[in-house]
Amino acid sequence: MITENYYIVPSARIDFDLEQLPSLISGKGIATDIFTVDGKAPASVLLIPRDPSSAEQAVEACMDDGRHGVVFHMGPCHEEKDGTVVMYPMVFQRYQFGDEMGFNNEAQLFDPIQWGVGNGGPILEEWNVRLDPLEAAKGIVSGKRLHNVVSDMPTFHPNREGFPCRFLFTVCGVREDGWFPFNSIAKHDLQSGKIQVWPPEAATAVTGEQAWDGSSSVWSEPLFVPSANATSEDDGYVLSTCHDADKGSTTLHIFEAHRFELGPVAEINLGELWGWNVHSSFVPT
Image (cartoon, rainbow, N blue to C red):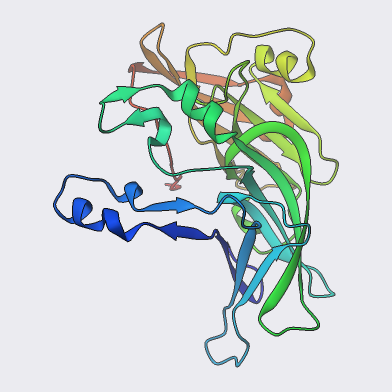
């Protein structure tokens, strides 16, 4: 992500086990055998100056209370007038590489639910990053959760990158056990902290009104597509494919972003069950 003056890069401290390197080189091991995340290191982020002629150094900013966290995906970032960098990352409380998405390469087994239980799940937070006045190239991060719903793969209005942004759209994992695979999508209001979740069964499970088994459907990374003559930040459409294992089908769901809570305004049957759409992009014609 970018702001006016920085490239924003989430970081994590890694421990290497070089004794496993020969096994990797010989083809007997996999890359994740030789490194692990340091679970005691505080969450951190790098601010890298965008101006190549600047004498300013890259800044490493760490969580002020020492809280651990691992970030892969981020929502919008911007700079305040006082120089504070505001960012909206999806934060794992814990994460270890290996068996990604629940697939064990060595045993050739797939168990996504237990993989999700072990890694805790990413949660949307607001981080405020300030430069350390006492030490150059150092920064301080203060963070807070906006809610407790597992959320990832964010999308927002493309013209708001690097600027203050109010609305964010993500996939969500709403399950009694674990959180993966993702089985719902959501609209987040970054100003109020409110969240709207779809489908309705997931929404009532989030509020605690009714239990839900999580369904056999997997939702893909949503895409926000602004209207041609948009008059507001959420004037546009949210697109996501839903992969239904029970029905053996894939459906493209289209939501009006400003009325997201009403559900899709169009559903397009794409035919047989596709492989999960992890990441996507939209190219206007």
